Length: 256
Ligand SMILES: C[S@@+](CC[C@H](N)C(=O)[O-])C[C@H]1O[C@@H](n2cnc3c(N)ncnc32)[C@H](O)[C@@H]1O
Image (tube, rainbow, N blue to C red; front, top):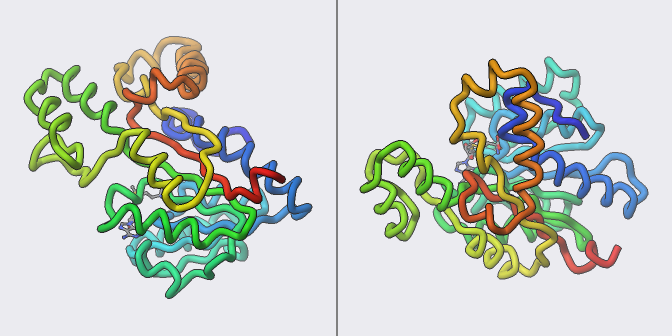
């Protein structure tokens, strides 16, 4: 799946799309179904849900924000996939008030664990929404990336504060409620009963390089995308990535 978003935005999402593409293709082959059932918890206005529906999958988005769901509905209609995208108001903790337990081939939980009251419960619920053969795509803010970014911006005290803070926050002005290490995320996924399929660092360099370099140097964007893809796989870079992506697989899916 090439990144279905605009080129500059691809820097934020290319690695995740690449991993998702492989996981979806494997699920399609294993199930023999072209259209998978996907749950996007905290899916917001459909950054992932709408492109996934464009690939032919059926996507249920659960999100507490009426504004996000309104934007999702409009976007799905504009992209001609309204029949394959269902938005419902709800949250990760009361997930089964609005979503089917054990009803989905793939569950996305992207940029949500940072905000939920209890991340372990959020992951457990996401996993409980999977069919016996299913895949969890978990994306969350990385601690090390934030520390590095604050330090490179000259905010050394804030960088240190983020390192010491149990939630990885650099101060009261930090808009992010919580950040994670790769070890914390994989522990949450394994604690919910899945095997780790892969861990990737997302936006290792993209947020650190001046935008002007990427926008004006010929070929720079493509070269940076290739560099991000190469670094994403290497554990050495996980500790400094802005976000971390973890693919979790049920044991049955792993065997398929
Ligand atoms: C950073 S946005 C991510 C949106 C989308 N997943 C994406 O990757 O583009 C965070 C989303 O989480 C939603 N959210 C916040 N608290 C939540 C909760 N307790 N359960 C589910 N979603 C929540 C917000 O409404 C928002 O749409």
